[in-house]
Length: 367
Image (cartoon, rainbow, N blue to C red; front, side, top):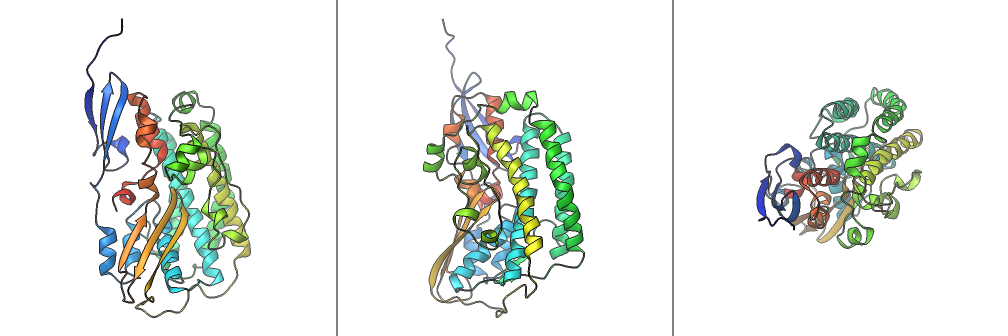
């Protein structure tokens, strides 16, 4: 005879290491099994979209740094692409290659943190994440050379980038690109067949492809479900139409596939950066524009394939110096849409790993 138990409600977060920031879940448990969840957002809300209406188009770039603060360069780029569409201008060819290269470095840095913290959630305390911090530091060194900052960059500009790359940048990048494939092999060698990783992730938190598509999921989470959708291929921007790369996909859509897809995406990013270094032409790094931009009345939507999925900005102009309206399509927020479907029926320990495998950033969710 089955033991009859009463469900209990447990608050997880907002201040908890496994919630990756300030995210709160109210979870109904039957014993250890998740019966229901209620996500609670808003603890990191800064009103970025509203603040954008009070700033000039260039000043808004600094707000985008604070969205997904582990991928600030990608946020800068998505916003600048949207403003350029609104104004009907295009960045010079050299700027496109610089932006592509920087965006792929940012993807590697973001994936390193996603993988490191995911393994931390599995109980692999400290060692893997320290390995990944090691390589991320080198990327931050490169960003510091390019713009003088290590976290909030504001490097991208409407019509290009703030400054051309300094002379010491390319030699350092060459060394990094030559070393990085061996580091990725090292991660894979240490982790791919790890018994604990396999037990805790294979066939856990499965997200079927049709459910992912209906939920507007994008990025590595969607591709791990077997859907080869990537804006860099389907709607190429910057220099992506001129470089060759593959779209890694999974077959099951579980935690393990999401881990493997991010690992392989880092390899593809290295491949893209190498091609950009070979193809980058000389020339201006930025279009000459007035200090105050005044796009004509109208609206535009610009988006990129960020490390966590499609990141887009919808801008409305009334002809003034500030956006009349700015709305952000946050991949982290939308990728949480199906959290309940993914968690119900699993146990407490699986809840932590499934959530960790989604790689969300609350700065982008609460914006």
